[in-house]
Every structure is written in structure tokens, then in C-alpha cells.
Amino acid sequence: MSDEPFYAPNAKPPPLPQPVPGMPLWTLHKGPERIDCELRSHGEWGWEVQLIRNGGFYAGRMFERREDALAHADELRADLRAMGWRAEDSR
Image (tube, rainbow, N blue to C red):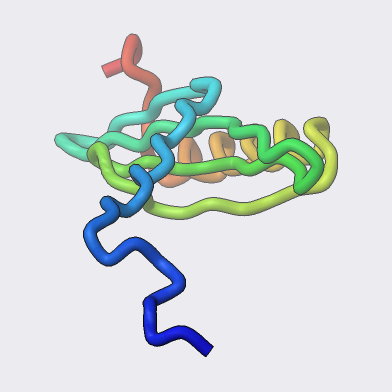
């Protein structure tokens, strides 16, 4: 067995993968707070509904089918509107 490392000691690590932007679904506001909802495809792993609150990741949920993800996003929007969140144009 060789004493040489199996990797190149001076090699740079590969760059981190860049996030793929999601498809915007809706945006709601409540005072200075903002929540954006995006739909993201993860190929064979399914679809993700992702919530972005004030520019940072807030929550996400995976679904096998796109239709189920869209239905969940609609339910979230209705629930948030019932709690006083409003669309941009209704402020």
C-alpha cells in the first residue's frame, strides 16, 4: 500500500451547487412581513412547496405529484389569508 494520499492534497474542492429558482406561486404581506410561496421540481423525487419569509427559507414540504403540491399551496394561502395576510395589491 502506498503512503501517497488517494486525493490531490492541493486540489480545490468542487464548487457548491447553485440553487435552482422555483416557480413563484403567490406573495402575501402582513404589516412589514412578507411570505413568498414557490413550487420547486426535484425530478424523480417529486415537487416541493417552499415558503420564503422576509427573504429567507421558512418551510418546505415535498409531494410526489405536482397537483398535490399545488393544492397544498392553495390551502396554505387560504389559511394565511384567514389569519390576516393579504396580497400585495390589497394593502
